[in-house]
Image 1 (tube, one colour):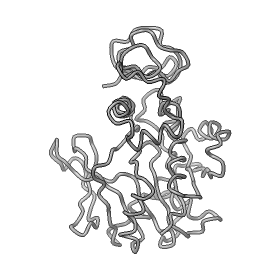
Image 2 (cartoon, one colour; image 1 turned 120 degrees about the vertical axis):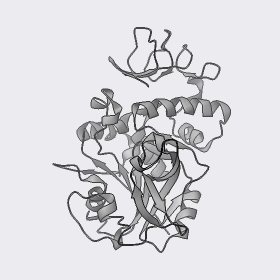
Image 3 (cartoon, helix red, strand yellow; image 1 turned 135 degrees about the vertical axis):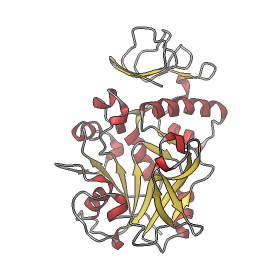
Image 4 (cartoon, helix red, strand yellow; image 1 turned 180 degrees about the horizontal axis):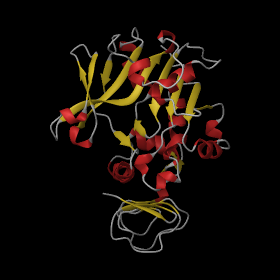
Length: 317
């Protein structure tokens, strides 16, 4: 079974990225040397997907201007959502209605700010088992204290309901939706406009929707200031302890991670200060206290972990 299309979700408002997110679109935040969106497109291509779409709304012009001269985005189609953002369901229907798609083929949906790194062989082995269903969700286990909603899934792996996070006790292991799904576009009813994913695309109250629980797989979340900071530092630790890790090898292959900039002893990147990740041009010599510098030079010593972009500084909690 072939994956015909991929939609990378990039239309969100980026409100969880603080003041920096007001100036730098979330999907343009760098994973060391390459923007998130560049790597998502590279990942989709590694799965053998030929038709790749990116939806745009908030700061769409800025995103497009950065991407248009990047060879990675050659033949990638940008879908503008104007005047309002369409939500995920609406974004999928907007793609499905395009003249070169016409509600045909299987669509892989990826979040622009997260990586559940599965190889082509792994993802096809999962979807082969449920190929007769029009939808397939990928789930994983998280701690309820992190604010995620849960999914109630039966023994047959069919989704029963969404469980609001407030219904869980704190520090409880729950199963939640990753944001990755496979959709058979030919089985969708054409619904234009803004709609929610679980209403117009994956309505498990009206049809059987199976889910695959991803176990023993690393999850790299860059979707908030704190999660971005944590994932970036965790990548350096992973490089030190497991340099052959599949996601590390992917980053190196895509020239997103330059090994000569890594100081394994201090777990720093392009910096002389321990624990500092410097993605700017100049090597950092001051004590920046486990900070990430996206652009510019921090001219002062920080006494707390942070992320900075030019003169804008976000404190990491």
